[in-house]
Length: 211
Image (tube, rainbow, N blue to C red; front, top):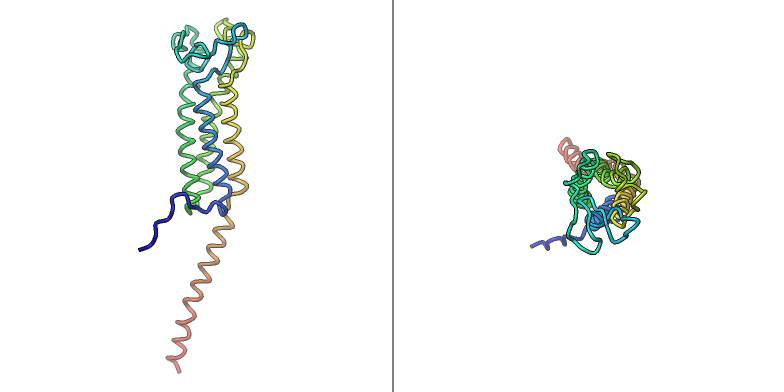
């Protein structure tokens, strides 16, 4: 009975690009999960007040004093709602992207499918921190509460940007280091060589019969 292959034993050396992106997806996911509930903005006057994507609270407390859903400014409320939604979507697609990389390590020749999925994931991960940056630099409904006049970037924002950058580096690594054309050509050469070896005995046998 053949011994079952260890789940973690994969061709990492032969798929450096997929390995690189897999590690990047894991790190980006961790940064995004940690950064999302943290304060993306902090009050300049009172640094103990944090503004997250979901509302306002004391940085040391999980309880919210004010929810973004209660904001009467439609433009700002909608933007934060988009950021909330896209953080969840980005987490989901980072997991899918990591699974696609794992399949590549298992022998699936899907570099460009993985790349397309990575691009979509990249786009979803781009939204949350850019929304925060737009609110930080723009006055909505005549209120400067969340702008750079009264706030500064918090650790949550730094982690969202880090997640985005790490995933971007992973995509570059996939494109530059993951084999595709070379592997396909090599496989075709091997197949032709095997077919040639299989045909030679048949040719010899037919020659003997003619004699």
